[in-house]
Length: 223
Length: 401
Image 1 (cartoon, helix red, strand yellow):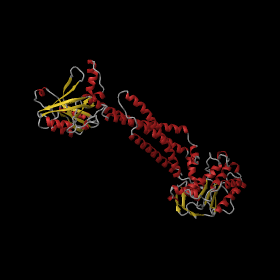
Image 2 (cartoon, chains in turn cyan, brown):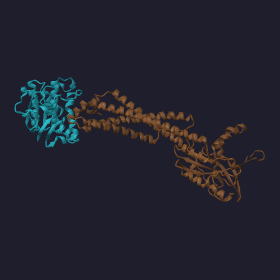
Image 3 (cartoon, rainbow over the protein chains, first blue to last red):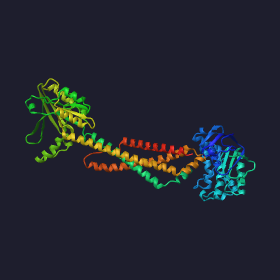
Image 4 (cartoon, each protein chain N blue to C red):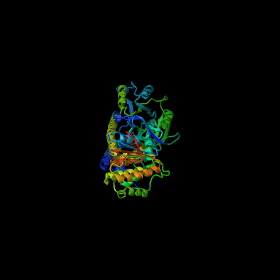
């Protein structure tokens, strides 16, 4: 399984493209592999995440998601892509502020049921016990029954990561996921992400501002 | 039932007071439209139901009688040509000819127990016309060859004249319609070809036709067996049914031909047309008001979606399908439309039963129940409104990603 970039130029970056970036060239992400994209602000990290999540289509070139041209995706195909294939942690996390942390986590189960059309749900949807176990691992189990609005940003980041893990995926894309975490907590989170991704044989794509977060075993992608 | 997570997420951003306002606005607009439609339907029933003379579309026509007629120099009958010409007028639905008796007819009634069996006796002038032109259809309104009993229809004016002028002045008892219908009297007819005895009774009373009517079968039989004239008689009077709102055109034609008709009835007819026009205007206003309130409701729905834009987009980005969110909105809207439909119909029902009492004080009788077509139309309208809103929601949700 691959995600192929063919001469893609995002509209906002038209005038700033440099030769050594993945923009305006051919590049492939392979599932099962790990990529980190380290770049300062304004180079298009979030734009890249937007392309993979299907939230933006303002680019030239061809984006081929597991063999299908992204411009040929129907709205339903995008829903399936997001629910079953490509899990994303957005920079602004996109949590429901009024729901509790646990409600945010179990929402993916409801979405999975819609896509499995009431047949057997995916084995990658975790029970509340496993989710609590994971939350304990990340140190946010005490926050599970609180509304997300009351959590600190670092706690929210960990809830968002857990939500992204609680579903089937071939790809997990995380946009500056550890920006509000200390090194220790970032490492714990990364370990969990790698463990779950390995179980699912998925590719990991992580963006970061600078190499403070340089991750061992990850391929560097320049943009 | 457990509230769905979708409701929890999407309702949080809404303001119930605004929703209530939007619902009440639509409710009022919708009420105005179906109330106007119901009024229109009621009025239509009242106009077409023949006992109630407002806006009658039937006219009895005769030719003006001039001094020439008195010397038998002019003719006041309608020729076949003239009848055909009337029938061909676009404003006239149908034409019926009156047949008059061509024999002498005398009604008599003996008063048992009075001074030496006093007998009341009067000459009769009879007419008959096609049954379709009658405003009353008594059950026993028929005469077959060999029947002794002849049913008759009298003008309502007759009994009114008797009850309110004649009887009080003479100290006689007033008679109800039912009493009069019980009386049986003798009818003797005599013509060039012989004489015969029958019995007569009053079968009903007509508002429309000022004449003593007998069944056409009897008139034809009696004219051919006892009549004084051989040929088919020409009619002195004819009755026309005007098409809706065509009375002015007919009146103009009658004037140019020198025909006479009941002016009061014509005025009533015009009044009916005017009332219909006013109701039409009310209906148009109602539709305008509804259009405005529906637009307001549409705006409210758009506002509601915009207000939960973040929540909706977040749902979509987690893989929640557009179609499920749209159908959630569709169900909420259907529920709201159902509330609007049911409460408006209930309101209309109560308002109508109240206004019916009011109308009855004027001597009219409006139908008791809501008109089926109005209900069907209301249902159609509610469904249409739902569809318009659903399409708008669908369009707006698909814009989000």
